[in-house]
Length: 428
Image (tube, rainbow, N blue to C red):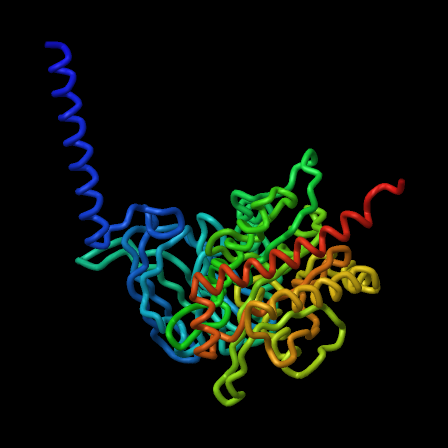
């Protein structure tokens, strides 16, 4: 009797489990994915945006589904207004922000740290933030974030900037602690872990999309997928400890990326990117490997370095307050050994990569990339290809291509570090 009851109970449990499974499958089929961190969850939703006004007064209005806190500040060089808000799920039109009005030339938005989003306005000239507030839902209208900008002269702007709490806003948005969190499951190395450290840096992220394909793919997503696959590949044999500058869609300032490498005593720093060319400049394709130099190897390298070095301005970082570490780095760049090792790894990387993928006609280049300026860490920047080229883009979204290319990069890392570990070993 007890056995029969037990079987009956198991049958009920089994039916309940099947019902739960079918319910979940139906939910997914309907497009209701389970909440994932950084996707939707319980985060406020921004659904619509509009601009009003002229060159003297301009208003920005963002529709929300719940009230949020707001912190606003100004930045110079170039003129920008920055709005820091809690993490928001932006569900705006794909071209939102591309067209400005009045005092706002354009604006960008996105995640700037786990739990925090940011909106950055590129201003047509000096302006002040007259008001930044959130209206309650009323008369059938949703809660709304309102930012009111008013034109001022340069002197007035500079006075506002001097008394602004912009540095407080910046610290709250991109603190060193949040950057450490951004390294995810393969975080900072511990003193007891004596394995060589490889820092993998997926370019851009969060508010900074990087380059974008005409079909909508963004550089930040393409390079993150590649970097995560490269991390997994390198960690397979357990010889090296991998630290990521980001493991999700988070904005990380360039100086912080350098700091991650130096703080962890990295043996190698690999930054992953994907280039794009305007139509008028042709349809280049293929991967390119960059190292640091004071003088760019050609005009294309100089253009790319200038574009990549603007990432902090895009993310709303105060470029007038460079950390003193950067000054030290510029002095220490005379360390020839680091550059020698960087160039050696770049050549080794090219040799491996060209066996599995198409390389640019000039695959080895150099320029003044800020993200490569750790004086004591061999560093390279890999441009996987051009998102503006259909053939390159087709490869970058291919898991098969990614797997083969990741293997070639991992082989180069292994060969480079194996030699360095042996040469650094104790003399017998």
